[in-house]
Image 1 (spheres, rainbow, N blue to C red):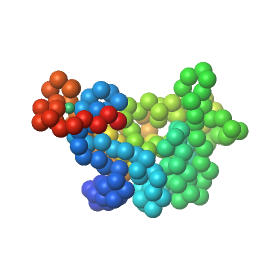
Image 2: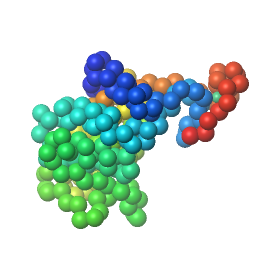
Image 3: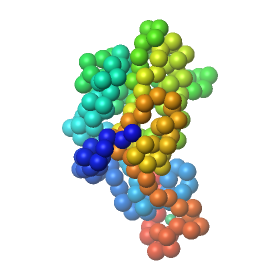
Image 4: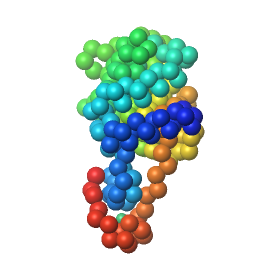
Length: 197
Ligand SMILES: [Zn+2]
């Protein structure tokens, strides 16, 4: 689920305020072209707006009674820390492991059965979140829920990718951003200069 219309409007306002929602003509990592681009680090470099969004996640997750918050490197570290601060919990992060996937290193521990809230900044393919869920299970923890600041996986307010995680899912804002193959991109047709992201 997403945070509902009021939450979504507030979240979009915070992203615009931070300059994280850019409009123009962008080539995404996938090679497709889009008229909107989310530059998450414009948000994450601003504590007030980032904090306000992380508070939305904390308010949603509180009644699930998580015991620890975990996220993937890089932006997920910030989101995890801020959400954990609101909930009065530990914050840990999973980083790229030599064997592939992600792992909790640096002496981070999860107790057997400990209930873990997994968070991230922007959900696109869901790969990073899945890696963290695997890392939680590998340590004997129980993935309790997944929450992200922005779901741009193409899911509507329910989040199609989010629903695949097998645990309750929340996004502050679900963005269904149209993108085009370069060959039939209307922005190319208009001759708008292309920004490679
Ligand atoms: Zn184009």
